[in-house]
Image (cartoon, rainbow, N blue to C red; front, top):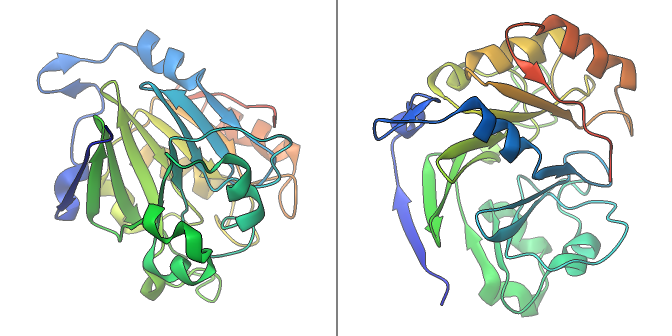
Length: 245
């Protein structure tokens, strides 16, 4: 039976050192292994994580084939992140669908029982996987992702490793109060980060050990940006450039 525990937390829940949880050291080899279980899917911010005994999709988009998801996370209501056509490809009777409240109007009537809402600062635990919703917004390009919309990124704790999918965001002040082991963040500079350098600084803010760039090469950004991102973080952070599945 699926066990879901809800909680509303202050933002300081993110202040967990990214190498020690409850006094137990997380080895870099384990973090690298977890990164290998993360796939960048068809486009934009679409990610699949196969870990913790679960298949997790975040913002499924341009999927090439159907699958069966245990958990589906939606960061916000833009069509390249909330795609009902792609959600249908992975949604089953056993799936849990999590999204900000304003996404609900896009969901089909027969999905309502499957949908749970999270806002920034809230979290839930599903069968031992902690899912924290954190802010995601623009500071400069505020018309694209306003803070008032309460759109989110997600920090997932799986096997004691913290994976941060930023959603569509610029480098925001809250990142300095977060900590993660793996960060998945956008390199597109039209709607999200203002530059590749800003994305690199955001990675350092959250003290990530591994960074996986996403959200580039389709409508904005190019492959060369990922190479530049990797060069900027050389020595400081291991950057893994994933090929889209």
